[in-house]
Each structure stands twice: as structure tokens, then as C-alpha cells.
Amino acid sequence: MKQNHFLAFDIGATSGRSILGTFDGIQLKINELTRFSHTMMELHGKYYWNVFGLYESLKEGLKICAGQGIIPVSIGIDTWGVDFGYIGKDGTILGLPRAYRDPYTNGAPEDFFKLISREEVYRLTGIQVMNFNSLYQLFRAKETFFTPLEAADKILFMPDLLSYLLTGKQVCEYTEASTSQLLNPVTRQFEFSLLAAAGLPASLLHPLVDPGTLIGTLTDAIAKETGIGKIPVVAVAGHDTASAVLSVPAENPNFAYLSSGTWSLMGVETEQPVLTQESFANNFTNEGGVEGTTRFLKNITGMWLLEECRKEWAKEGRNYTYQEIMILAGKVGASRTTVNPDDPRLASPTHMTEAISAICRETNQPLPKSDAEFIRCIFDSLALRYKDVLDKLSGMIPFSIDKLHVIGGGSQNDLLNQLTANAIEIPVLAGPSEATAIGNCLMQAKAAGLVADRWEIRRIVARSFPVREYVPKG
Image 1 (spheres, helix red, strand yellow):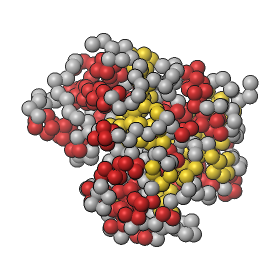
Image 2: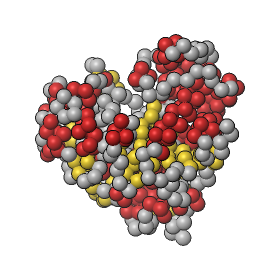
Image 3: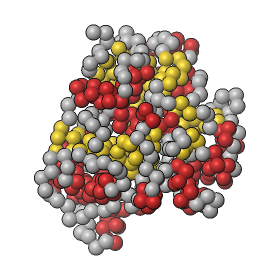
Image 4: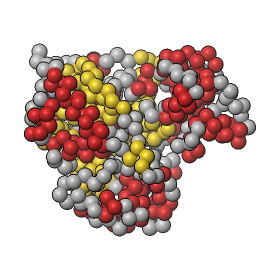
């Protein structure tokens, strides 16, 4: 059978990879070509992403691919949501994109709601209110006379910005734009009244394109520098969770998913957005999926808690592998201490362990004393939070949830998966861990006419990648 190669750039908030997918029409195999780290940059009190460093990492992935004698059918890029870069009229990138954890948006939603009420913003967008949503970033940038915005002709969301660097072509991909709180999930168009309220022109945004749209080919300069040639770049499901949900190996629509990484995103796939008083009160979000679907979900703080603790412990000379972390947490037994992972005090504390201890002290719970107790506290807290969110989710949708599919890096966390199954009392199916890159590659295969629809994609994933099942044990 013919081997078709697809190159996926999967970039999260702390690291990225170039993944080569090889599809023979029946199964997909993936191979990591490069892995690179990137972090927020603090400059004069502002936080940015080094998009030009990412650009160099993308070129390195192209060189490695070409060096192996592999010429892919196409290239696709997915990233995290909400962040964007400013583009001048002549196509110049106006500085580095601001990072979503920059505190400049603290309190921005409440200030914006003085112009348009919270209820009206949710009615128009169906998006969970979070201070770093693109709407509030733009609102605050306008208020503070942020120079790149004042000079901007357009904005490009992160995957579109990186595609622009590779091709010179500007687009606005639907799933990524849907995270912005600027888009109406019913009309599937931007709500320009929200931009107008912030004092910004509608012309700042490009028209939307669907996943599977051809953006362009690599520029002549990049094709020559990397040796890979004039390869097409496709707009995949640019938001990493949209790509991940595409590769959930579900047999039918009665599933929930948990995309587990720095963030945990728990939700379901629906044909229509859910815009009710209950979804508004519970602050659930309606984001775009492939084939016109909606990802009705809740953003939950995930492994961010553990990663911040690990950084503290590393500074003190205690470096733990994930296998060691599982062993430590398993030895502790059930925690007597839990916190709400979404407590605002845990969003960006100076010291995560101190922040967790402060919450425990305030709620009259025993304080974790050892690293193992902190780890177990985090895992138990996440499992209980997942139960809380799934219970609310189940009450707002017109079908019953039979299984929870855990995808992403967290799918390899055996202990947390079992704790989650125990808490939610339905089976948990874990895998694939590389769901986002898989969805990226298979969306490219769909764009190439090799795959019919999202359900065929899911059957391919089920054939290609094993899953582990965790049944509730009480």
C-alpha cells in the first residue's frame, strides 16, 4: 500500500514537537522527529511568546524531515488557544505575541461587562469567561494604548501566525478563532459588536476558514533553506484540543473526553451549541470542532499544579521522573486533603506548595508535609474536580455519557485515571497520548481526500493505537 506522510507541528504552552504521520489507508503510525521547549518571556513587566524562536524550531523540523528523504503530502500546525500576534499593513509582524498568563488582563472581563453585560457576552459567544480570552486581551491592549495594536491592520491567532511565517499567507482558522470569545457559535461568524464595544474595527479579523483548507505552500526561501521543497500547508483544527478531540477513538456519540495536560479540558461533542441559563451559570464553553460540531466543555486547571511543584522541588535538588511521581503518590494512599484546582490563587502563584498549604489551612484541612503528600493531594483534587464537572455536564446535554476518554499526556497517568474512574463511576478509556498530533495528521489526510469524515478518523485511531480501560473500583 502507498505510504502517505504528513508532518504535524504540535505546539503547547511549554513545548512543541514535529511529528511525522505515515498513513497507508488503514493504519496511522507516528514518529517524533524533533522536540523543542519554549517558555514565556518576561520583558519590562510584560509576558510574551518568542514566536521567532518557534519559527526556527519549525524550520529545524522541516530540515530533519527532508534529511531523512521524506517529502510529506502536507504540513499542519496546532497550538494552544486565545493568543495572537499583530500584523501591520505591509505584513510586518509587530512585536512578540502577548502570553495568556500575562497579568495585564486581570479584572478585564469585569471592566468589559460595564459596556456589555456578562449575560449578553455569553449569549453572543457561549464561551467560558476567563480573563485571558482574546476579547479581553484586545480590550486591555486598547485601554493601555499598546503600540502594536495601535499600528495593527490584522491579528493572527497563534497557528495562523506560524503558518503565515511559513507561507506568507494569512488566514483565520475556525476552531482556533472559536476560543477567542469573539465568535458566535450559532452563526459561526464573528460578533463584531464586541470589537466595537472595545473601540476596535471589524477589519482587524480575517474571514474564517474551516479545518482542511489549503493555506498555501512553503515560501521559496524556506523551501530552499530546508531542502524540503514547496510543500502545501493546510489549516488543520488549529486549536490543539480540537485536533485532540478529533482523534478520540469513540465508537458512538455517547462519550465524554478529557484532554489532559497543563490544562484539563472536559467536554462532549455536540451538533449544536448549548446556550442555556444553566450552561451560563456553570460557566461552560462552546468551542468549534471539525465538520461544524461544537465542543461543549469546561476548562479545568490540570497538571499545571504538579509542574509548578516540580519546579520548586528541582530548585531544591529533588528531581522526579513521572514514574517516580506515580510511585510516590501510590505509597501515600488516599489523601485527607483536597483543594479546588481552579481556585484563582493557584493560577500563577509564586510558590505552588505554599499556595496549596494556605488553602488547606484556610479550610481547616491537614497540611501536606512531604512531596508525596502534595502529589497525592493534587491527584485526588483533580479526580474530584472531574467528577464535579462531569456531573454538571451530564445535566445539560440530551444524551447519557457511557464512557470517558482520556487523551493527551495525562492518559499515561495510571493512578489518576483509576482515581477518576472511581470518582465518576463509569469506565475510563485512556489513550492515545499523542491525540493532538494524530488529529493533526488525520485532518491533513482528510484534506488530501484519503479519509471521509471524523468517524472514519476515529476508526483509524482505534485500529492504530491501543487504549487502556479503567473500571470503577469504589
